[in-house]
Image (tube, rainbow, N blue to C red; front, side, top):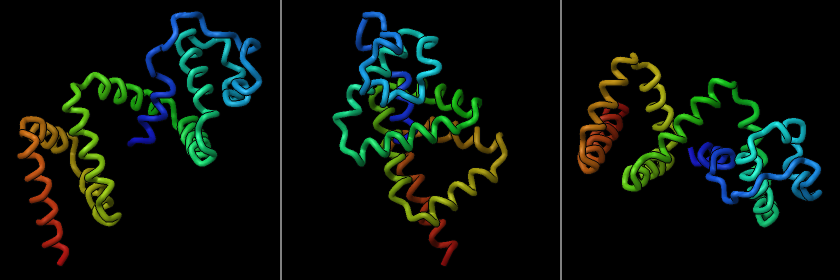
Length: 168
C-alpha cells in the first residue's frame, strides 16, 4: 500500500510552485533523463502536473541508488496497470488524503499490522475477503466503521485467535 501511495504522490502532490511548468526543451538534461518515459506526452500535460514531476525529478537525484531503483520499479508497475485500476487507485488516494489525521494514522497502523502477519495468514485473509459477496463485504465495512479503534483492535485479535484455533 505504501508503494501505491508513494507512486500516486508523484502524480498528485500539491503544486509547490505557482510558476508555469517548463516545456520539455526547457528541462535540464538530468531532469529529461529522469522523466524520459514522459517525453512524448510532456508538453500536453497540465502545468501543475509537470511542475510536480519536475520537483520529484529534482529530488530523485538526491536518493540513494537503491531508492532510485525502487522508485523506477514503482513507476514501471504503475505504467503497466490497466486504466480502470489506475483510476480506482487515484480515487482511493484522494479519499485517503481527505481523511482526518487520526483516521489516516489508524489506516497506516492497520496496514502495518497486516504487513507484520505471516504470509499464510495474509493469504488466508485475502482469500476470505475474495470469497465474500459484495453484500457481506459492505456489512463488514459498516460494522467496522461503527466501532471504536479499541473495538476494531479487539475484533481483529479475536479473529486471529479463532483462525489460529481452527488451523490446529
